[in-house]
Amino acid sequence: MFKKVLIANRGEIAVRVMRACREMGMKSVAIYSDADRIARHVRFADEAYRVGEPPSIESYLRMERIIEVARQANADAIHPGYGFLAENATFAEQCEQNGITFVGPPSGAISAMGDKITARDLAAKANVPVVPGANFSLEDEPMARNIAHEIGYPILLKSAGGGGGKGIRIVRQPEDLERSLRSARHEAYAAFGDDRVYMEKYIENPRHIEIQILADKHGNVIHLGERECSIQRRHQKLIEEAPSPVVSPEMRQQMGECAIRIAKAANYVNAGTVEFIVDPALNFYFLEMNTRLQVEHPVTERITGLDIVKEQFQIAAGQPLSISQNDVQFQGWAIECRINAEDPLNQFLPSIGKIEQLNEPGGNGIRVDSGIIEGCTVSEYYDPMLAKLIVWARSRTEAIDRMRYALREFRLEGIATNVPFHQFVMEDDDFRAGQIDTHYLERKSFEMTIDPALAEAAAIAVALEVHQARMQASPTAPSAPLSGAANMWKMSGRLSRLRY
Image (tube, rainbow, N blue to C red; front, side, top):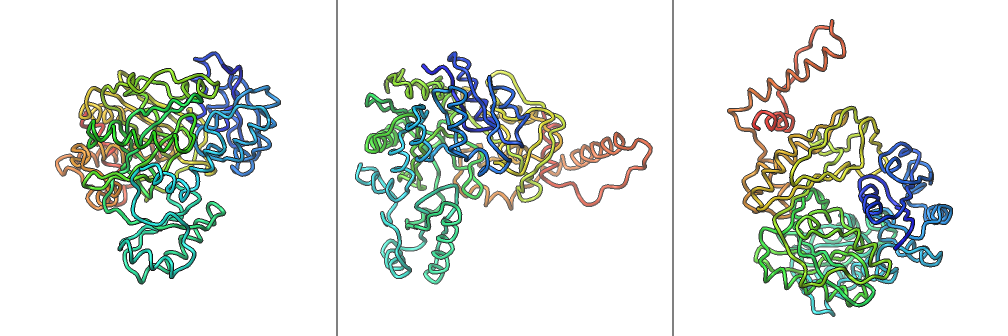
């Protein structure tokens, strides 16, 4: 096993990987920008090195500097976490060239699956269902118009070189095609330096379900079941759960076998995720493959009892998988809420500032993967995710209720977070019934209401809190009246405190 590992990341995932290093007897090396000088992952590591200015391009994306630090620290492996350089084939290749083990797939697999057109073609050749469309880049508007006529509107234009919702356009009418194609290409080039766009049939009201796989260097590939990731905003996941409320054992086996075929076709090694889109009739189609550790990996860990990060290290060190497919057992239900520095009171705009007070929940079946500490500053330079709140229980209903209580305990003062949003979802009848898809939030944004019977009590709670804050700031100053009605999101947060 490795002696020292550099974690080429920050925040909660850096801390998560460092914990695995400690348990496996390996030293951890942190990197940090000037904005993260006193961040939690810096304090948690055995060693820490500065890599540059706050902007990512000048710090966490500086491949040569990170390699230099790894050599300076005598690290024999680099774990990229997710984001930043995790799916950068050039970085993986540079690690290989410098005799440093990249804890992830080989650069060739990253390149093959990172190109969405190549990945789609590979899946089709592996006899995995793909959404009807074109397995090639659209050369011009006439070509796009012909293909759209063949598969029928609505259609989806997608960037070939990236993800995260960039370079994606839904086109419902032929007259919108030319403008949408031009817009998708422009956004794709700005985000990825690659303006290639391809086309798929648009699936109405789909679910987003993914399969976790593990593959070692000895040809062994297994899957660890599915995760339901349909609660999204602008193609960004917010809540994940395992298993999915609609996947039967037979469907799980079929999806798992498809994921394994794709991994083998790509000569894949290490942890990866094969994502599928599922229509209302429960037909599933290959979407893409993420060649890295996923944000939502903890829900799979909770229902399987496996430590996926430890498995990554063992695979990277050349060891065979610790279990076979027959050994994989699923127990209970797990849900993850991403705690983001986003203000649901103001269209989920990012919130920055100093965390004045922090209380993270705990107790049976509750796990918090956090990258923050009291007194740290949330800056505008990085992803707004602060922590992940994960719960496990014997059933889905029990897991939802446990998440409700845990969210109530999650107190963070100084900046806005999306905790009230998660509270609303856990209370929603459709979510509790498992009636969700990727457009859930779009529908619910116009239906979010508060129980009238509790509205007055919630408004009083809001008023008292504001009054107390004003008195602490200036005990002798008269309290100004509150302007306007208490916002539903804020009230829902207070209601959660009143109800339980």
